[in-house]
Image (cartoon, rainbow, N blue to C red; front, side, top):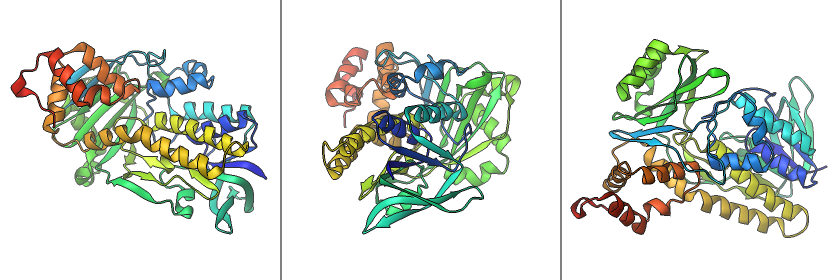
Length: 410
């Protein structure tokens, strides 16, 4: 009998397990994958996510891999271009975009060192219920007999297609349909900063350095163009860079060499799921997912894992009732993610900016200080109200000399 079973051992599951095991709880982690192994991912960890790794004692391990530190970003939304980087966030002045085979192995190892039992290659096929409450899981290792494990609580950290969410019928809400499909591939021969560029025809291209001297290059096309795009992925991939930023397109053509196959990443809808019930909870993409465009997935998984683990510890140690602890986790998860969720779903449509956003972004590009502040928003060191509240927008317009007749607030 375990205190906690965590289904899924990647960037939401292993941190949750590690934090609970460090508090002395008996934790079992199950994942159908074996590690190290890759998975579909944006790769990027924002500075606020790296602060969690540092506080958990894991940032040094990541820095010791050959994933390069990222300290320069180029952002464009159609004809509005910004270059710079965020100020340090709680002392962290860089971003990283590690391969998931590297990152997830660090996290799995940390969970094991903390005392969690990790079983790789185990596929959970069902939950075990007793009197309407989840009391365990059922599944099997590859080729082995079916096994059953029981615990006080089962955590689904098993992604968008979560078996835990499915079997508990976790209710989705605030759903915003996905608009795009992502293709990415690793390339050698390029020396780019973080590139993040939206074009005029519902397309996006980006690139960021990762392990082994490689650069992750990615494009997003609207779902209405997916059928056409996949007929010749390589040509359309190159054409997207050519259309959005011809200079990057030329560098890709002349200097870049693709290393490995293209990876398709069809976007799941943006959603929240009700993240808890009798004997169960959800964390990471299992409970909350948004478009990969801003690359917040890993960072959010770290932040929400920490929130959940702290509340579960309080409940498992008898400090408060389990329902109260999980309800607070639900509240904090939604409150801390609400602004980013709204911001992401607006921008990831890749349509024409609202008059207000166009005016705000247009003013920001006139000021290095405000540009740094906007990158700080992406990095997790600046709150939305510091840029987008009425008072902040007024200061922005004053600082950048926007004439009264060009100021848009609504």
